[in-house]
Length: 180
Image 1: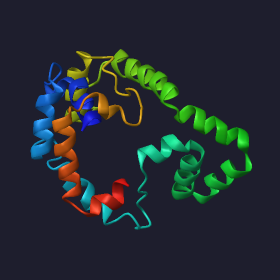
Image 2: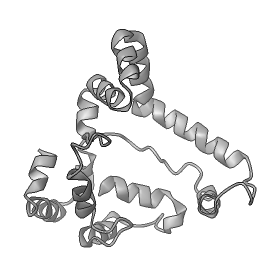
Image 3: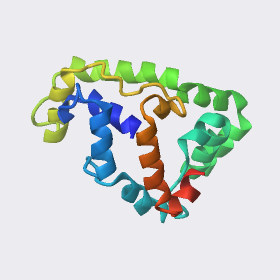
């Protein structure tokens, strides 16, 4: 909810740049956001978690053990790349370093600046990307990558919000397996 709130505020196309978390929370809880009910969205993919072309991984696990997560992702994507990382510790460290939030922020800012440095030609670019380009030019450093801190949601939720969110999650017994 918190990450989606910041995403929504960051991109001008949503027209919510001055929006308050309290208002977004209510929309989120009602399932009236871009993806409708978030919990139903996750559930639709959870049933595929063991499919060979789906990798289901928790952000918290990636933060707790980046090495393990990188190797798990590499193995999922390509067994040969996984083998390279296992056999080459320096390469693995390099991937972990470049996957770190600090490094990703630098790359995201550089790429955003490049994206806006060149005008988009009408014939070369889909209409949706042109619209995004125009809207995002109004907020070029919108903070696509924020903090990357596990548990930062606690800074946004009050006691009532926390209770309501927990009730919503626990009302769906399958979420206990996903979250805990």
